[in-house]
Image (cartoon, rainbow, N blue to C red):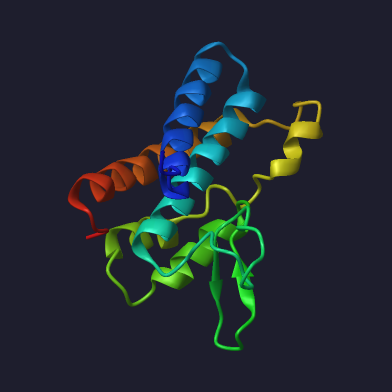
Length: 158
C-alpha cells in the first residue's frame, strides 16, 4: 500500500482542527478554540506549500529520514524549515510573492491575525484569551480554508 502524501495529512488535519475550533468556540472554550484555529491555518498553509511550491518533506541529505515539517533549499543551499504561526504566515506570503497565488498572498498580506498566537499557548491558563482576537482568527481561518479548498479542487492557487 503506498504511503499517503504529507499534503493529504495536512489537508485532513486542517479541516479537523477547524471543526474542533468551531465546536469549542460554540461551547465557550475560547482558549482551546483559538489554539485549534491556529493549527487549522498552519495545516492548510503547509498543505498548500507542499502542493504548490517546491517545499518538500523529503530528507535533507540522501539516506536520512524524511523531515517532520516542510522545507525548501535556500539560495545558500541551507534548508529553510516551515514551522508554526506566526512565522509561517509571513514565510508563505514571501515564498508565494510574485507567483500564482495572488489571492492567498492578498489575504496573508492584508492582516496579521495570528501575530500574537503561539503554539506555546497550550501551556497557559487561558486567561489571556481575547474574544475579539479569536473571532478575527476564525474569520481569517475561514478565508484561508476557502482559498485552500478552492486550490485543492482547481489544482492551483489562482
